[in-house]
Length: 328
Image 1 (cartoon, rainbow, N blue to C red):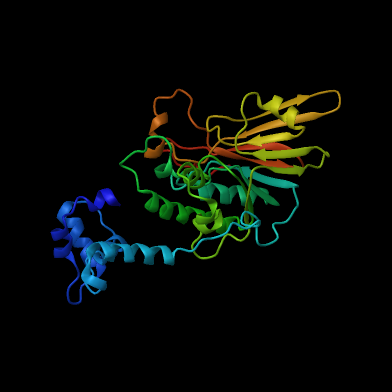
Image 2 (cartoon, rainbow, N blue to C red):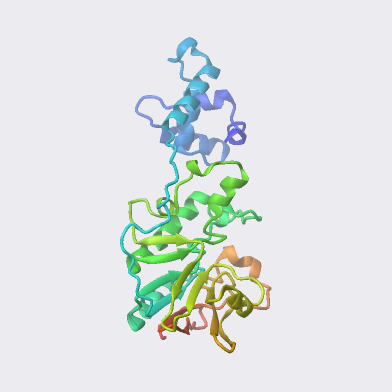
């Protein structure tokens, strides 16, 4: 914000101050046109306070201090609560048919993602929904270089919310795994020394209208399957997935690995385990994934269903135009 303000002289800001029936939106528009950089209505209002001569002594510096104090007083410090990540309604506990998918990376999800998941839901009638994480992409918040041709963080979130609201209408009760992309706001805050008390929880970030009460977020989800053997769901699983399943003492499903979509089995004298990669549901043609253009292995679209503890894959078959064929 300081760097942006340095582009304008005091005289230029004063010249753009609202007069008569003009609003701060008008001031923002004039400033934007003056330097060809975007100035928001809120920022214009903040800058205008610097030149508020009704403040004591008419001192520009003192006026800015007053503006800063007013902003601080308006901030609500939210104390993290134990149930911030928990569902606020009963999610049900029947694991007889689990729909398991992940890596939707909204707003860079596949354009037919919702239609595909709707068809899978209609066909299999799942009793439980588990999302393996990276529900949103948060490209603009990445620790890596971001593409300047993509949306700002605010606009990206607004576009992601459109998909998230569609997904919540389809699956009002869903367990979601904490993930590297989904948690970027928290990781960025931690890296810059911002305590958790200042940060909204997942539900508040993704929903503006109090929806999402049936969604919950977890480091991992562990459920007993009908064999009496646990199933564990998590976002990332490194190394040999079957070995990791054996170490965890559970059948294991992971997301994160976009190019992996498959099921493996292993058995000992007393146990049988499976491991599951659920692929992804992003859009390979989105600019956010341009980094993978020259990689030989491409992401695999699809999801999985786990019926009576037995997993099966449901690939999302595409036509030559990168659109879902409409067939399961």
